[in-house]
Amino acid sequence: MPLIVQKYGGTSVGNIERIKNVARKIKKAVDEGNQVVVVSSAMTGETDRLIGLTRELSNRPNPREQDMVVATGEQVAIGLVAIALQELGVPAISLTGWQVPIITDNVHTKARIKKIDTHRIRKHLDEGKVVIVAGFQGVSEDGDITTLGRGGSDTSAVALAAALKADVCEIYTDVPGVFTADPRIVENARKIPVISYEEMMEMASLGSKVMQIRSVEFGAKYGVKIHVRSSFNDEEGTWIMEENEEMEKVVVRGISHELKESRITVVRVPDKPGVAAKLFKALGDKNIVVDMIVQNVSHKGFTDISFTVNKTDADYAEEIAREVAKEVGAEDVERNDKIAKISVVGLGMKTHSGVAGKMFEVLYKEGINIYAISTSEIKISCLIDEKYAELAVRALHEAFIENMEGDIQYE
Image: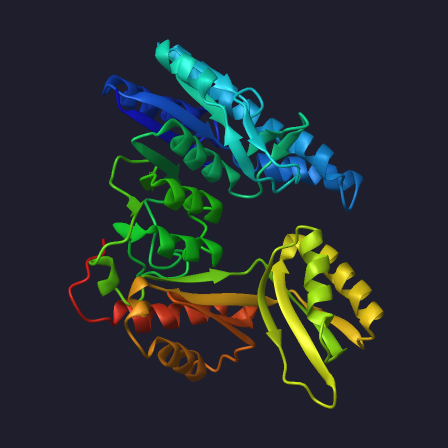
């Protein structure tokens, strides 16, 4: 029998009526002759509510205990989905991450999956049951409940699809697929029928909210076909798969923006070997992921080092930067939370020139200053003031997507 892994996001299971709708979709897949494993997020807003409770007690809650609290959101959702399926006459069982088990490392609140034991899931599938697994969570080798970070249910789903060698992993969400830009900002944003793993990883890392980057990494590593689609209709969504020659005809596939980063600058750092290593090793030792890094040209033996981190890590990163600044004799540490990262992404950038110049020209014409630039083979990112983010996205979308020539098809 074909095996399908379906993942439902928080909006898809946001209330009892939506859970009933999810149950009907699952039943339809079963009736069509598929074995089905379901991964569910917590109900809309529940994770934020639970995190809020921990923050009422502490500005910096113990990560292990926070995981213990937050993981309950998915446990509620999977139980409700199982009950809804049973009411439709579909045998179903819910399993938390530790019951599967999904084994992770010990980094609480942003753990990484190390391995998945599929024996219990396969046993229930062979018994004719739908297995509903809690997304976003696992268990460490020490037996502690862990969570995988924001968007972790996507990672749970694709990792399970890989471990089970599923035929497809369907990611059900509140949007009908991956778009060329955020449709809430760009009225003319278009749905992309097919996108490569590489492009999707870049877009996810650069602010696209449709997929979590680690889930796409799993898909690419293990060749999992991913179908992103709406839970509110039966339309085709966006397929994420290996690249092909047709994909490279598109110079820019999409425009992404990220507002959840902070820029931290260590001012007047002595320009000598080892200073940058000391700073970024200290951040790495605390599992803080650094994105863009800029070091100014040395002036009279001093330089400035700027870097960006996720806003959830900004307080801790600033604290570490101040400790290192004091140790190396830097003058000060400055922080800016009002920034945005704007990016253009496309496989065609590997073989087409002029994208960077065009991007900078578009931003210049809109009077937008660039603070930092980061590039790869298939993307260019610029750091700008947050207040110009939507203007930049619209202008770049018009220049690279709406005015493009050729026979590239969008929906």
